[in-house]
Image (cartoon, rainbow, N blue to C red):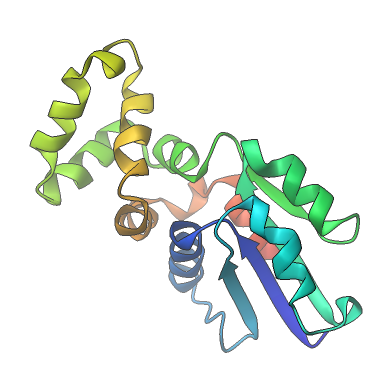
Length: 168
């Protein structure tokens, strides 16, 4: 294989994977692994056509949210694995890190009042705390992804992140 590529939906997914690899003592660029955010599942077919390397010379994998899994699998085909987050990356990380620790991270970032304001919104009141955290983090994905990875106990790494890094 000439190249190893993990295709992810966005920059926050890339930030999380790169940080997790670093925590495990891996240097993905030195290993020849590229983690490429493509801007959503709809962009995957176009990305694959512009790859520039013959498919047989690329070790390719995908990481995506559950809602994008069908599109990712269709575009990647039967030879490249697709690792799917239960709902999305934020859902996986909130469950793995734990609500109390995520709340501490938000407070440490000086955003506790913003989170509390979100919780008081009518659309949020009926949601679980986990869902509220996911909404809050969803607007701050790139900033919080590495922070949540840093707070993660390495034996609790979500299966999709563990799987894709093990593959490459």
